[in-house]
Amino acid sequence: MRELSLSNSRLDKRYDVSKRLGQGSYAEIFVARDTLSAPQSPHSTVVIKALNVFLQEDVDLDLERTLVENFQNEAVALDRVRHPNIISRLGHGTARDLAGVVFHYLVLEYLAGGDIQSLIRHRPLRIDAALKYIEQACAGLAHAHSRGIIHRDIKPQNLLLTEDLVTLKIADFGVARFSAADSPITRVGTNIYAPPEHSPAYFSDTAERLTPAADIYSLAKTVYTIITREPPRPYTGGPIEGLPVSSNDEEWSDSLLEALNRATADDPSRRPQSVEEFWFDLGPVLNIVADLDPETRVKRSAEVPQPHVSRGYTPLVPEQPSFEAVLKENTHSSARENIQPPAAFPPSRAVIDYPAYEPVREPLPRPVVPVPAAAPTPRRKRAWKGPLRRLAIFLAFALIFTGALYGTAVYFRNNGILESVRNRISPKIAIANTDVYLRPSPNTNNDPVGLATKNSRVRIVATQDNWYQVDIVEQGRERVGGPNSTHGWLNGKYVDIQEN
Image 1 (tube, rainbow, N blue to C red):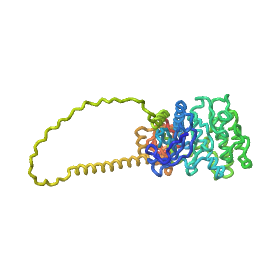
Image 2 (image 1 turned 90 degrees about the vertical axis):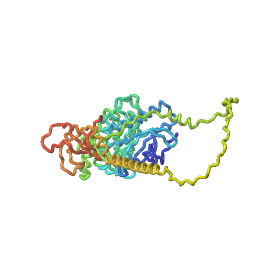
Image 3 (image 1 turned 135 degrees about the vertical axis):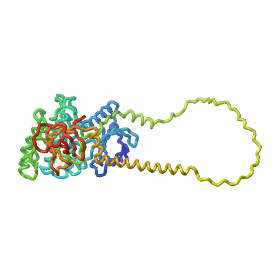
Image 4 (image 1 turned 45 degrees about the horizontal axis):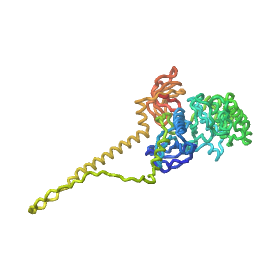
């Protein structure tokens, strides 16, 4: 096993790697500071997920191609399911570590709150707080399914929290499947959370193709852990048939058990077939909790789970990566470093043909004629001082001008000005996912100036934080009365960006 040498180094002249968080079978996780990001930016600290094909001893070219393809697919999956409650990819790259090993990496947002498993281990959650986290997990997973992505490893350790412990995001799409019908089921997941159709311990060769019901099974067992603070170990590989004694006396326990039992049925066809259906099954629990304490505000107000948007989220995705295999390059690099001279040369006489030697005839010396002493010549000023001074002045002005350009570019980038210009040159089209008012400025502390009805097509012309300035291209339906402006600001959670 050969770990990457990255600690206390600068990656690609941008990311200052501070520490190593951990590793998987073929990837290492590091925390880094983005030197091009403003200190107050929510993305000034990032996660570097590095593909390291040398972590195992059995690597070969075919395996490496598969690992690189899966690594790139993870980036594609993250971009396809971009959502406020799913971890965002911020960038990618290919670099060498301090030992010269070539590797690929993804840049992900850093969620300083840790995973929800660690949170509930140190303190219990009120039922209303637990349900708010569960709603965000449902919102993110439902969006992933709507984009044809099945996660396949939903568990508390893969539900991460922002530093303020308010927003939850689904992480680790490394084993995600792009379609329910793209290939047969493979053994993945964590035993106590994985459904029997693809659990490493209960895998059946007669299993059907993978469906969203597999994620719903894992989500239900994760809900069990979040609410009860105990893993569903007694029900590994099977349906949940009871709750811990500590939860049995709660007024909502029977409704919760009924929803979890259905969602963890052995037969995938008997489970809820969508996350929205599972959320509907949890409706009685939410209503009971809300009736017990009206201040909790967890009563279901919509038929679908609602997302929670954290500071710094944007639906705009970075450039797509295109990774290549690097095993051969690394092998050649290490081979050059390990070249040794041969033990001995074979005995032989080397014959070198030198050019024929011809003596050089020097000319006879000329007679020396005495020359009268001349008056001393006055010392002249050095002619090179003037050009050097002009060069120094030119370089100083060039440095000042370059620094000003760089500072301006950083200011424009950090304040979204470049993005606004880019949107005007090449505008993005979005679809309103509900009726939403247009505002004269990017906040709700003002009167609406217009209305975009559900399914309206809008053109994004500028962005600021999580707000978009849009022009309505086409209304979703006819409307009568009210503010009628077709230009204004709206919150990004009410529109879905259309892929170009």
